[in-house]
Image: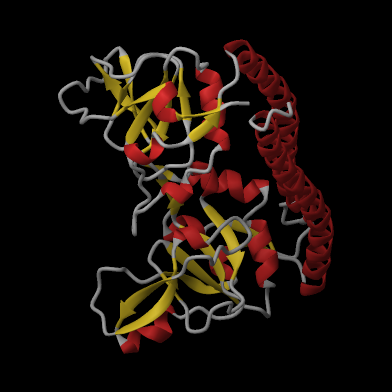
Length: 373
């Protein structure tokens, strides 16, 4: 297929500040490089324009089939005669814009560099045939991906049900003891406030680090605190961590700390429960917080604000759980971990399939623009 420069087959509309045209009740959407961000009374770009980020998100094109206003972080790439708008969009999805980034900080592209891009431009009928074939194959992929995503959602439900069903029934008659979290710990400790005085630096855990049953330690920040505060906030092996705030259906969580990072403390939006190991096993307590009883408890007790929900120390301390003898707790844990290992295996298979689907998507585009589709 003949290759032509963008300068010969399209034009680029530079974005403008939206302040003078912005209106919540406006007729036309406002787009930045990351997507829709409001409405305006006027527009700059015609329908069938592809957005390519000028700054920030530069490698995630967006196709817009209505008139819109683009701000100065987003280029509007509009085809001239002889170039199909969807064909151009799929080329942009296929094309890697990153080598054109000449910035040293936030990714950015120059209009002059974009206009030098070369792309295959067959006849308009051939372009439309290629677009039809791409969308036909993508539709099949989308159906498969949808099935895989539903499988992941079902796995999440199964995990919770598996955890819940492994525990003794919540009655005093068939458990040794029905306890509150405060009964089996030395109390709930809230982490250190970031605004207090400082003298030493230590790594600390934030809400973002405490996930539902696991820790995300990919980004660990440091906190400043007084030397004599270290012991008060220091995490120790077996501590159960709970989150104070977040989405209403994700309050509490329950994750065991196993000294993954030396000398680590916790911030004031993360609670620490130090379990009395002569009474309960930390993992037993943590898994209980992921089951349906605890999830519903946190959901009901969470205090909702405009953007997030939260629980306080009293709510967490009053969470009830069945506490049988340690041998029974060990059996419960073995049953839970056996069931969850099956879930993990299935989820790994699903994640691999999702990665393969994305690779297939890129392969389809590669073949399309090499004339092999």
